[in-house]
Length: 190
Image 1 (tube, rainbow, N blue to C red):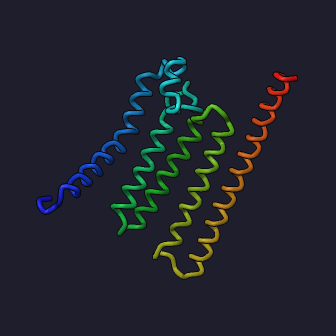
Image 2: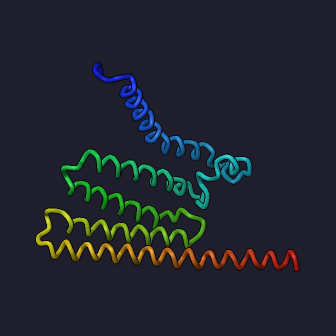
Image 3: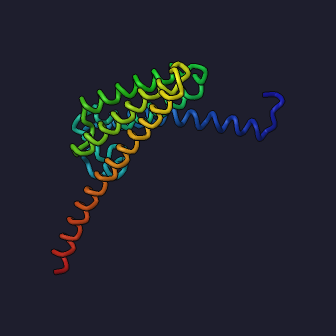
């Protein structure tokens, strides 16, 4: 550090500050929601912190872990990708284990208010896990380029199915919301 310029020291300090915020934010969010758990249905709290638990079934305390798990999972991805680049098998193992744990959490807790969101999240996680299992075939441990080629196309097919399914769900939900909006407008002005 003695040979660094002031700009380099500032950038280093700024990066450390951002890292601290990124690591503390999920924990502080979880603490905030836990402290206010019995008041989450109050309008003033919903106005202030509603985006932290919007669409979550806050009658179940474990549902509040959804965003925490989401954030910690992404931080874990980053840490594993950066520090374990020499061990791709451990990276894949981490990916598969955390994916399985998230699927178990989502099936057991069903964290969202709407059943469609719960099942859509489970479907998305299953697609992610399926792609994760294909990663084993794309490492140096797999024999032959044909296996890697086929695994790559299989992953593309899984992602394509996932995208199409999500687009279909979004389209039907949007059409349903538009029908309700038009019905309200019709009742209001006719």
